[in-house]
Image 1 (cartoon, one colour):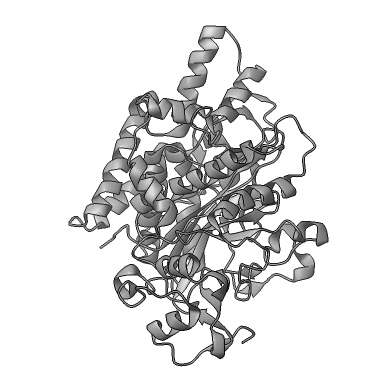
Image 2 (cartoon, rainbow, N blue to C red):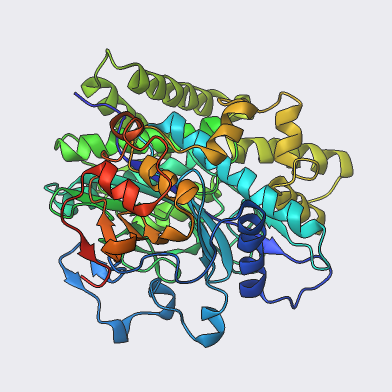
Length: 509
């Protein structure tokens, strides 16, 4: 029986600008953003603080490693591109077990590992507060920086909002591709963030559902910043590779509306369950990329999508097929799964009758309604530059500036969290994953913590020397398993003894 619970996480690259200085160095400003959060909190921030030893960004799920000579420099996430970039590679592990760092020309917040879509909503939104704190700190400087939770600068550049899901390693990757391509092509109607303009540079007149769709160029592939694929093949599990595969999803939009984030992660987790069980609907698009673009450009949600058998379908019909399969095989007694299915159903019903009824839940609809109201009042067409400015302003992380935040405060966007829950998530790790242990190390060990990553801690344990503590199982290192044992621990040596670690590996092992 399908359940929505699985290990998952969110990554957000924030757009940034330095007001009044269009020639500002984005690498430098990204480092300033990260340091602006780390400094006041006493958190370490350096290129060496992240433990890159177990990272393998060129491993491909199709069974090979890309030759480093053939890789674009943007794929070498474990290697600075040059000396100039190296000086700006700030890496911070935050109090809640997340990673906040410079990803090339953007500050990125990668949430701690969680187990449910509701937790994703909470900890993803905690990242928005982390970004806001950086902005507030830099407001006091001579060079303030603004951050935007969006995916494009509307000038031809796009940056990612990624998702991560642990999947059973025994699941054939070809089955993952076959199941996910039609789902991802059409999922945007549930959780697109909307965008003014058609085409990469937004020069075509109009409004579309997804901010990312026009930037994708392949159905399957390893790259993330060029030749972007619908299904990414990076095989870097950050966990036991014999047990887990990490599905790295790069096709999603940055969602601000909490119901959209909830359905984005919840529906995807359930569909992955279908794929793992061999129960996914058999739907093959004739041209997945064309379908992706067509769906994004079609606000009527009725565009015919060609299938390989010569027939056609629509985005809504494909989503209905996946929803129905999940409903049929779901554990009816599991409350978390039932909640996701209920929201997914609500979205599909609203989209099939009147999408504008979901302006309180889906970003593309909320933005579309906002822009249509402005267009009608001002008597302007979709190519008016003011609309592009409103589009960007929707995503500003500052509550007094961001149009999303103004809509939410006015009660026009639904919330699933409270301010108190999100504020607590900034400094407290989720209970059910190894993020709790990472949080303990960051919060208590001080200089004893040499480096950290998703699946390791490197500590200076006094007489034991510098050692690496592997954390290959995401479901260990949890609050339930460790809270009592690590109570009062403030040194690396004390932590290792509390964990009962008898045999330690050196950092270079």
